[in-house]
Length: 155
Image 1 (cartoon, rainbow, N blue to C red):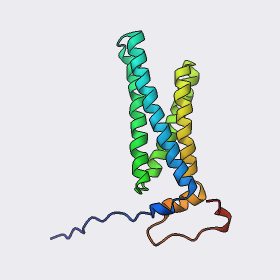
Image 2 (cartoon, helix red, strand yellow):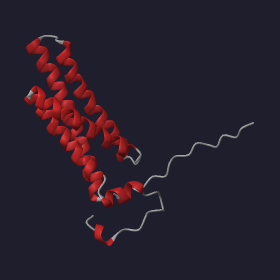
Image 3 (spheres, helix red, strand yellow):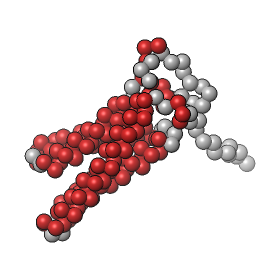
């Protein structure tokens, strides 16, 4: 018979030792998620009232709101210490900004420009999450943290 080992939780860094960059990265991800939800909900209501139920436009607004929910869910998982979600959230913010930039320029839409600006806020959170002190915290396992560099003392 094959022995299956018990499933263990991956080691997590201590939440009390979060550097400032980690806290601000998580705040920016949450702000971007909340604003995307608000913009999506506002877009659904405004477009339903002005255009009727044109499902092409409403689908885009609904996708923006869903994107905000995903930002919030992944950010909450990362904040609770499931640090493996950092790369997923960072990749998502990069993809969203990369997709919205040509769409905003191509359609010359003020609404998409606002969504792009909110997505860039989330991208700044991703940049902060990969700064050296934050990166060290995310890679740290309980009781097994790499030594701190003296140049990175800007906690």
